[in-house]
Amino acid sequence: MGLVGTANLVEIDWKNNHAFHGMMLGAPSTRGKGIGVDTVMAIMRYAFDELHLERLDGSMIEYNEPSLAMYCKKCNWQIEGRQRNWYFRKGRYWDRIIVGITRQDYLELLERTNYWSDEIS
Image 1 (tube, rainbow, N blue to C red):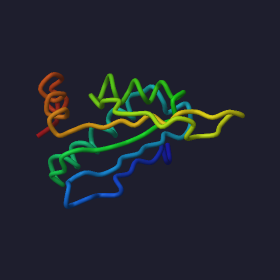
Image 2 (cartoon, helix red, strand yellow):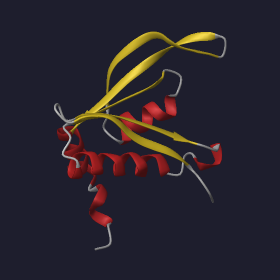
Image 3 (cartoon, helix red, strand yellow):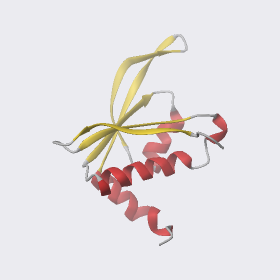
Image 4 (cartoon, rainbow, N blue to C red):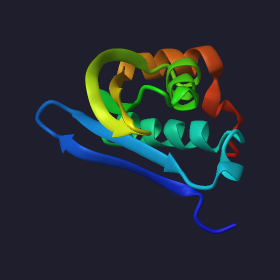
């Protein structure tokens, strides 16, 4: 299959225990198959359970409704702000949507979904 996309955890602030997360899936044929959700869940698990961070931050362009839905509806991230006219794409300016999740938000998601309960021991 080759490279599907990229995911990162950058700008780690060890004093305040937070970091910035970003992700990009490549070919449109890879989208809509749960790869994004699995990636975000794995990043959150690593950030919260292994690195003991308290929160993650992210952002996306306002017209990226599939990403907003995945992060906010499926992965429990919250919209925390908007920076107006941040991006210039398609001949016009678009807002940057700021999203974030706390360790507590993540734990509530796990409680509600039992996401990791199907793991092989």
